[in-house]
Length: 176
Image 1: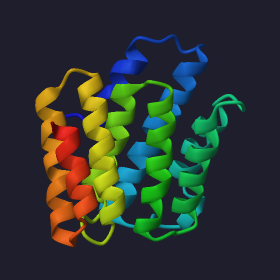
Image 2: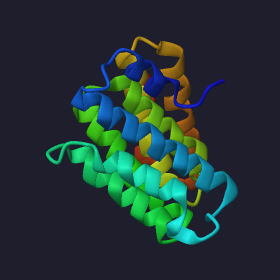
Image 3: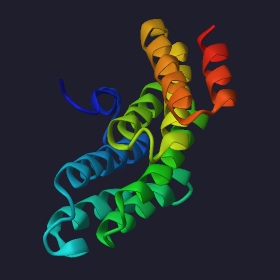
Image 4: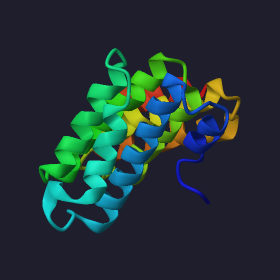
């Protein structure tokens, strides 16, 4: 399965001259950078590699008034500066939330799914529970009821594992 398919689909429906195309493209290349960094560790040469520069160029092409630009730039800076893996999770959640507020449900769901895929469910339990809850919401907005139910169930399971009864209840209420 192609990762970040939602971004490719969104780009297919846009013109390259469109501001939304630039921001969506930047989001895609940043997420692919995150995936590569999470799976293979820090890049040789740190933040001076051509990949980092190419991603920065895509982020710099995003309109200055777009809130995602600063969030994406912060993610790239964190990777270039060798930040620890867990420090990317809140940045990715901020990007997902920005997409969420713009009602880009499929893109937002993709970013939440990226958090769920890469973050440790116990060590970063609050973030993973939040990502699952928000992923479930986006899935509901997209009419993907089974995916929403699975996300809420996963959030509840993690909440049970850490003993957070409030989050267990929130997950059950969202599932209902």
